[in-house]
Amino acid sequence: MKLNLIANLKRNVLAAVISSVTKLVFPFLNRTLFLWLMGPAYLGLNGLFSSILTVLMLAELGFGTAVVCSMYKPVADDDKTLLCAYLKFYRTVYRWVGSVIFIAGLILLPFIRKLIHGNLPPDVDLQILYLIHLLNTALSYFLFAYRGAVLGAYQRHDVVTNIRTAVTVAQYLVMFAVLLLTRNYYFYVITMVCFTAVQNLLILYQSHKLFPDIQPDGELPAELRRKVVSDVKSIFLHKIGGVITNSTDNLVISAFLGLVAVAAYGNYYYIYTAVAGIVSAVYSSMSSGFGNRIYTDSQEHNFMLFMRFCRLVQIIIVWCAAMMLALYQPFLLEWTRGKPGMMCHMLTPVLMVLFLYVYQSRQVLLTFKSGASLWYQDRFKPICAGAVNLITNILFVIYLPKEYKLDGVIFSTIIGFVLIQIPWETHVVFTEFFTKEHARIYWRFHLKFAVLAVFLCFLTWSSVFLIPLPGIVGLVVKGFVAAVISGSFLFAFFRQDVLDVVNVVRKK
Image (cartoon, rainbow, N blue to C red):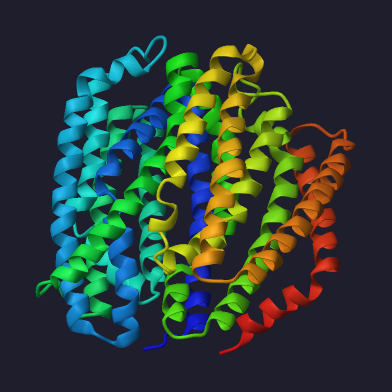
């Protein structure tokens, strides 16, 4: 069955955009309240627990990704019996995964204090807080998280996204009330656990409602189980490398620099994730669409589709990078009220913008690569990149001057992406699925956009830098100027692309 890519993509992108705005506004308000009411040490605890639990979630091994991508072909073939067997297999695996995560988390409990340099907030029990966070993580695997695979396989990411958006809004409103009325961190994290349960139950309900004939039933044939396990082995190596690359930064900063430094880095990284959400609203909605077209369309048609989305996403990335560089420091100055230790020098936002550009520019490629199940060919790539990142992380934190230690953490991640991950994964896609001529077109495309990005970032930043207005009014004026300059420039260059997108959206 060939699914309607454009119709599903429009639904998914709209849901993702709304979700991105929600993830931008409410976490920002949450961090602001935390910073003003509770202090930076509590923000540091949140970042530390998040990093630890991300490491524990390696126990998932990648079964979720492998099973969902394995469902693309049965969906294309309209084989519901096989889909039911996959779902039952997935349910069994996730119950084991939840158990392993919880037990591994308990084993780590006695060592949590050793991961924090310096003093803790005086009114917290570190072990109790960690246990609540651990329960919140393990709970999803027991409460029907596997049902989301059905929605993903049928390109209905919008359903899951809308549920998460609604639950997120309700959750943050309750947590805001808890912070304002009690200023009690325990009540805050307990609220988080309750809403995790609500979210999973809603996904279960919608999955049953939309696809009542897809239920966990039957046995997956042995050869397909072996295929999933083979994919999982490769995905697991990708996950290990990803955790080393993305989740050890807070652990290194906490161990060497303390919780306040974790909070400062978290503020810069939060802005990055908020802006990155704008880009991910597009490419995260493509995965199942690519997976479906891989089995229904020709290689040349797939390449045209791939490059079309690359161009669209790259335009968004360049605009985001220009806006981000121009407003990073002015925004943080107003947000943190100039609190000691919360602001860094100008090199930090420059590196964060470079990280945004490098990381996000590869996401359409990775989305297609995942849809094509190309994990085995570069299974050692993330391990090599993660090792380089971790080693350079520690070396930079130890040997760089104090004011540049956080910059070393960011730069070490960029090194791993530029020298190892991007060349390796690009080689895999353009040898296993596309051709060498396609690869030359792709690299020339990225070279042109990189030059454009450098020019527009400098133009937008220098224009905003010349505006002397301080305070909130100054921030608004700077934002308006940055948006007009970067937006007008991109529209002049890519007017036809914008009009094409508008025409697609207008189609019934």
